[in-house]
Image (cartoon, rainbow, N blue to C red; front, side, top):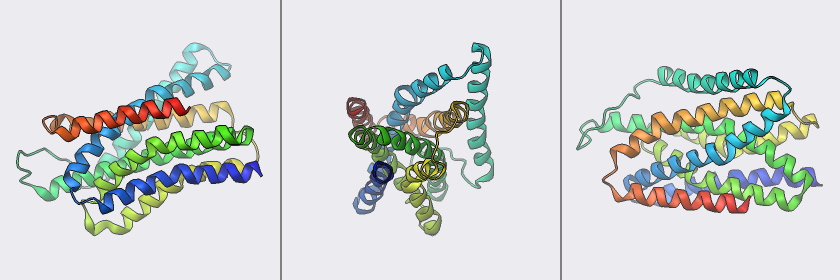
Length: 259
């Protein structure tokens, strides 16, 4: 029974992405929402890295019987690999390079750039959420209450990230099929992770989990530093940036309190 509840909890976490998508769909001032969501997502991603991923990497590294140098090389190499993978997408996804213009003279180029950010963010978060789905599943099998609280905490940072992805993808209306596919992937990614453990019926090795989390951390670090941060820096004069930062900090505090 606990196994089924654990699977359902991962759907709750993914459901917050859907709330984010619906929020974007029914909000009229999409430009302002996009700016706010970008700042909010940057703060939440940095919070994920420092309060979630790095402690998890440190904890798993302690379970691996390697020397300190071997662990550092392994983790560092996979962090870089995660960044290289997304850099590869930079090269594969066409027409995404963007230089900001004061009055957005090239509107189509700007929209393609936002679409690119949304696509890259969805891809990296999908891998991260598969791993979080595994965590929710393991915790829920031990304690239903703890599992539910973990799912809600994960949902707290899924909501602003869902708004960011949806607002970025919403700018390119001709790619509705791709947009829908990415949204479904994000919403179900946590459940996919839990389903893997449900089907194999055993825990994955610490080395395997350490490797996956390190790659995911590298991807999210790349998105935060090279995609979201430049957007935030460009719009520093807009008040929506500061609203987004404040909301992001609040969500991080709520997430840590729930944990």
